[in-house]
Length: 448
Image 1 (tube, rainbow, N blue to C red):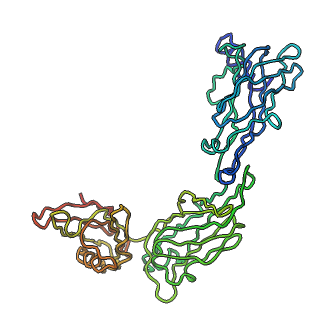
Image 2: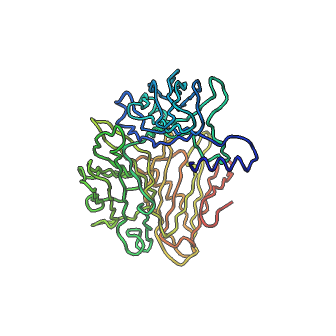
């Protein structure tokens, strides 16, 4: 007797009930479906699955196989392969169920063998429905005669154990890009090297992206090129060929393109991985590099010009071993009927001297973050001194390529000195009433 039978028999005995512990068991393996390739196929054939009856069936008993959805056709009749074989005749068919009646039982007893639903006796499903559902499951049920009294039902007290169901289809993207935590960018910008190197005098940082083509899935389609758009702060890049190296396991297609906020490159269809190396030690006139968070948007080409845009992947970050303080909200110029001025004071209680830089973001009419200033030098932080930054910041924003005068911004202040010795006081002031609104920031001593 099967392990399942033993479990249910013991469970019933322990509970002290007189229930039969016999139970039909369903076994099968889901067919993996390529979401991209199968859309052109009207129908999908389910993989083989077996039903092992464990009770004695009689002519007139009812069998129902329920499905999550999408059922199109089912075998008219099917006979089990046991010594006391049972023949089922189909009496009903919907998108979610095939209903059968026992029409013949050979011999006596419960050694009915297995019903094998597969091959000529396979179920057919509508592809569009299967893809829309994402997965399909089959569940077996039997009833005495044409009543609602269950037959061959397990007595199971472990609710995690599903004896009468099996997965039929699993729909999944055929092409997948992935980045493990160990393969993400993780450079620490060194303020001692003016943020032109990482700590340890290292110039480079590496990102590795894995690519999977599930070409063995049903309906698989031919893979094309894969394009990666790496999002982050790339304003430091001078000569692209000096800063960016791409290695695809197959071959790179074209050359990388870089903007202030993204880097894009392409690998050919034969590639199953891509390695991106960034070198911040720019020849000629290197610049200080800002901390940034990286993400990757991946687009897979396949078939005859189709594209799969994958969900954004986390690709790591560059941090800094100096002071990095964010003022999340600051008001400038005229807002409504009021005009405001600012107080932004950076205090250095340490013993180092370092340059103060600012990154500033505004929000456009569509609610999108827009960079106003990048790595803007505001002045110098001296030991045991306070630098007043409101004026230099206001002047720099007014002189930016896209001037900013009125509205609200977020400010990041980076100082090339040890973090522990730096704090920022931030506030804005109503010029008419002199009322001051203090803005909490994330410096070690947050102003309340």
